[in-house]
Length: 356
Ligand SMILES: NC(=O)c1ccc[n+]([C@@H]2O[C@H](COP(=O)([O-])OP(=O)(O)OC[C@H]3O[C@@H](n4cnc5c(N)ncnc54)[C@H](OP(=O)(O)O)[C@@H]3O)[C@@H](O)[C@H]2O)c1
Image 1 (cartoon, helix red, strand yellow):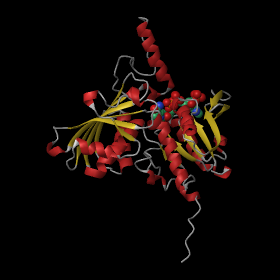
Image 2 (cartoon, helix red, strand yellow):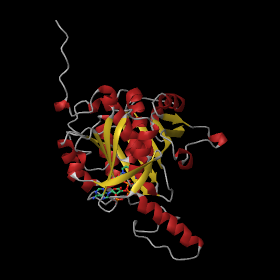
Image 3 (tube, rainbow, N blue to C red):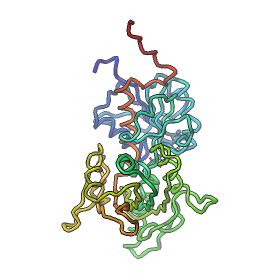
Image 4 (cartoon, rainbow, N blue to C red):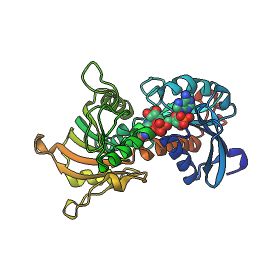
């Protein structure tokens, strides 16, 4: 790629769990980086970090910091995104935002790279990266939607503490140490100790009794899959795992499907790996998925509680920090580059008409 095709990329939240992984994924995948700007809060401004052997300074995320930026990967929470993403977009940057601030805005594409990349075409400067639990679910549901149709989906999640960020990882570590030392476990990130526990409360409770995390899975899946009436229910549970979310998924399909046929469908989806040999104790595991970009699926079986062979039960695991956040954001950036959609659609040069 020529020098002129190299892009200026800003990472907002560059000192966080997701931001650091975004920087790592950008460099690992050979993204056409000209300049990389590491942005965080004023607290981290001036901090030096190492990126691919180079020492770089973290700069405070201000509106002016986006001058000349082509792509801004945001991962600093909803408040920062609500405030700074429009400022970055107004300066010509295309924002790929990891928070929930813009996901359900009808004018903002919400994209899983292998499911609905075409939705990026009309973006106007802000693109949303889905919630990590939705991310690993959508490619699996896409495969079934396209082959046999979806009638109803029930998802129960087993989510790692890295989904909450660096402080939560520290809290789990501290509680494990306290337990081993016979000391009391203090909790501040979560309402209860997370070590040796399972907490069915992720994000705030809504009036309908679901948590906001559970409702994100419902609403975001409908938007990504273009199925506004999809019948879907979710229970989201935090468990004491550091990295990777696991999901038990029960699907009622429109027409019958066997587990073998479903495995073949899943294996054909880009970025999905089937691991399904229960007799040999082979199935997706959080510890195996951590550090990988793929979505792993196994334990595929017929659900006999649904008549006519239209029920499937399965187990899906993926690294929530990589595919669930950083990798998908970088994959979106790659699609924008490949298709010439880095700029907002209203700023793109009109396609040249072929002579009649
Ligand atoms: N972890 C996941 O699996 C996951 C998945 C999907 C989406 N997300 C979303 O990604 C975001 C970050 O998550 P995380 O896990 O990386 O959290 P984290 O480890 O707590 O990091 C938060 C980052 O945000 C920065 N930040 C905080 N306030 C800021 C401000 N006012 N201006 C600029 N930067 C600010 C922090 O910078 P300082 O170091 O200066 O404080 C830090 O770099 C959240 O919106 C989260 O919901 C996370």
